[in-house]
Length: 314
Image (cartoon, rainbow, N blue to C red; front, side, top):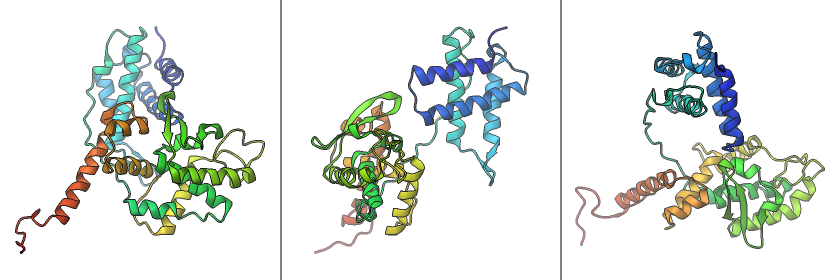
């Protein structure tokens, strides 16, 4: 009898962490999906990869699709179901490559095509109001302003921002060094506003917040520890409420806005790809669809002959 599914799952997770260098959040998603899959198989007395077949995987996907989560018993979204299937397929391909099975169970169930959801950037005016929300007369406000400026001005993911160290910022050159997905490093411009905000934070706030526990962390909480994504979520929510933006705004909304506003301003999509740290330009091209929608909206609201039945002037 060969290694169990549980043993193979742990080996695969080690592979993802060590050899592929996946982020903690992505690795956690794989772990949850595989734990659920192994438990599903165990309830059916399926203990090793050789006991699995296509119907096992299809039944697992159906069980995820039919289940709910949270106190409100919400159904899992199509995207969550597709992600669970993707985790199982890639897991079995790993088992095949490592000699744990001689069948390509990763191809037993086709990955569904999901409708592409468009990002929802903020208008430039709303971003400007949001940047002004923190009270820069306070130490915390200086920090919060710097965080918002870097998220929008450099297009960082929140995991990238909270992982920044002081030495990652070059204020003289106006660049920030970012460790992105898969451990890939890139340099992104800070921009004038971002540079000014980070300089003010480093000169006034960080020395006041720093402690022995701070080490090299760039953004600190008031106890001197590295700031967390949860703290950033709360500070953004407070700023959104303060300026009266009524739509839902997340930390990632600022990244969406960064990319969309660059493309609307004439930036090349491959330059935006590099700035965002996307492995494929196809991921970046979704933002071009947003700008097309914006162009169409402006055209139909502005051009005198854009709509049928337009009144001839002159």
